[in-house]
Amino acid sequence: MTRTFQVRTYGCQMNAHDSERISGVLEAAGYTPVCEGEQADVVVFNTCAVRENADNRLYGNLGHLAPIKAGHPGMQIAVGGCMAQKDRGEVVRRAPWVDVVFGTHNLGSLPALLDRARVAEEAQVEILESLDVFPSTLPTRRESAYAAWVSISVGCNNTCTFCIVPALRGKEKDRRPGDILAEIEALVAEGVIEITLLGQNVNAYGVEFGDRGAFADLLRACGDVEGLERVRFTSPHPRDFTDDVIAAMAETPNVMPQLHMPLQSGSDRVLQAMRRSYRAERYLGIIDRVRTAMPDAAITTDIIVGFPGETEEDFQATLDVVRASRFSSAFTFQYSPRPGTPAATMDDQIPKHVVQDRYNRLIAVVEEIAWSENQRLEGRTVEVLVAEGEGRKDDATARISGRAADNRLVHVQPDPSLPVPRPGDLVTAEVTYAAPHHLVADRMMDVCHTRAGDAWQVRTQAVENPGVALPMPTVPAR
Image 1 (cartoon, rainbow, N blue to C red):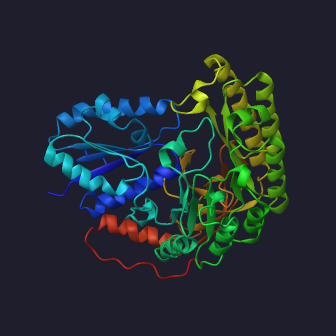
Image 2: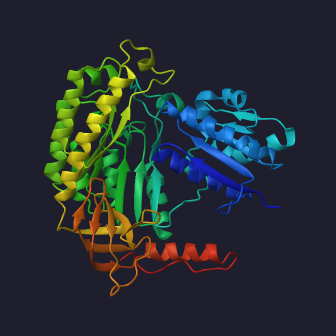
């Protein structure tokens, strides 16, 4: 009998993309995705280790599954990702009902490990210290028919004192541009119109093969891929962010006017303690040059509050940079020590109540600025890529939702006189209201059915009619 699987993902976009590969290798091995509401024969946790509560969340969820597994003979549980790479055999010690533990470097070995665990009737722990094959060579089961992640590198060469990722993902390894572009072209042929280039530090791309301009060249090359409507990337590092990347963004029409640029702190003293090799002045200079080249660019960031030794003066410096940068949104974090990082053993760990107070004040400033920036868009016309799973209902009226070119979330009121948009289609609408975290567009002006929308429709029909051969879309993207 065919065995079913479910993958539960925690953490960043890199983890989400890895989960697509985990699903792909399981399907290639004969497993099928579990139907909603049913219990899977194999449950895979793809874990994150960046935040302190990641441990509690994982082991809490494993504890919840223990009695369920006891009532389902033959059920297996696997734990992969960064937490597995960090904890290794500790996972099985704390949760002996886990069958497989695998690391960030050996996603493709999961089916074999599940088989071995079933035959041997004991847990299998396999953690590789480095990649044996680049993950992008593995089968992938993408969640979206119209948008896709494309890894350009894995690993990181930075030594930020708060971050455990380099220890778990290894040194940076870059893919060759030809391989990346071949994958993008294959995705576009399947109906994808938006891709996001992924790396722990995308603008260090090319360092492994000695080409400092490789990332800017890659962005420009994406502009030559026919049918590719939108290109995004995450995440860059201010140290490596150069003017040729800004020029490539501004001059390549399908590279979106959006930049996620981690700040972490606005205090030069804290940045030095973090081993972030830039200072506030350089950071703000990059922001100014981006906005000069792309005045409507939306800039987002990451900020850590309560790093060891942070003073009130340091925190105020962070608020100053936030106010000057005018972020459209920010991912904000309270510092938590991660075992194995230099910051975990630093003196002057900040009391929890102080961190919480600063965090609350930061959130208030971030949201005030984000709302103000969103209000500037009221009355403007935006093009929205309709997304699946981001909808909402206002006043009992169903809206469609998606992302504008600058990646802002937009809820659009459908117009019954226009064609019905599908996920993957593009709609043009006028922004009528701005909230801190989204825009509302009550006047839909146009609907552009796309090849991506056709691909979504084919996939939906395939789910509803299993075993029936359906044609792939052949219409152009526009």
